[in-house]
Image (cartoon, rainbow, N blue to C red):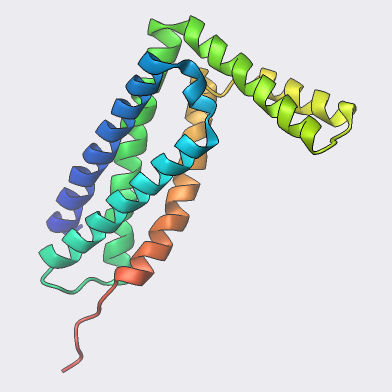
Length: 175
């Protein structure tokens, strides 16, 4: 693997991982209910998208102004995987070893939020009960829930990575 791509991916993975740790700590300190705030989640996703854009711009520059789709996607994937692993490791430590009470509070708030939203959409009570039972089976901030979250985050990152790599690729001229 190209050393430039690897270094770029690790650098931006650490940046996104540290950003993630920072915003988790911030929400933890300010109010645990921020963990279920949709608009904050969208804002954070946009920050990660911006980090990915800056990463691919820098990668293409470091590769001499040209970057294949594969090089862009590979660099983005390394960064995404690194950042997700840093963030998840911190979350597992915080919510499963340091402060399980806050994990439980967040979990109950998520269930309440989900029930309220399903009721707004006139979802039948039996379906709401199924959704709640499913949420109780694997809490999102449990170790298993967070490890499962790695897969969901990677899938989302793959989609973003494919799109961004296609946008920022610039092939070398043939002649």
